[in-house]
Length: 234
Image (cartoon, rainbow, N blue to C red):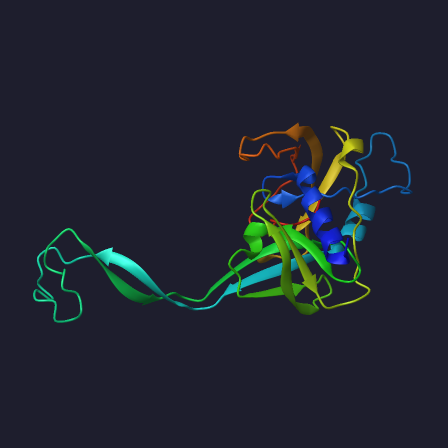
């Protein structure tokens, strides 16, 4: 099995750790000082470990010329005899083809670095249809990314940037996760970088009936997930 295939399989396995628009990866905050009874849980250790490995992703779709079907002129006022290359115009109730210029579009989301040599997991809808993908690290370095593989059924995508010694997060074991455990969600909601929200694991093995193949085993959490968190970390 080659290296790319290995990382793609890892990325697809993350579906067992996903809920709604976010991809959930367990962060182990072991070795932190024991919590003082009656005091709030300290999530700073987990946040410090997670933030450097969560990236901002910009999806750019360039302007394109497309041919679309538009309703015909029902009364033939503009070209009753088909002088402009549309002999059917004027008959009413038909359609004609017309070329239109689509505007340049940009969308944003989040991703998680899963290897030090530049493999990044995100949601498929974050990069779907992209002509250019730009990844911005927590330290503001920018890289062009390419899509290694996607899976629309599980809404997952694997990206690659040409970089080394990147901060990476390990993928946790969802079987060891317990309902009631604290979790954080890290991402770039509303195009804001390095945002952390907190909550608990509300339930495991959720099925939403969205997959025709029954590939569903979501982790439900009450940590705030906002637009732009897609592909982020928890």
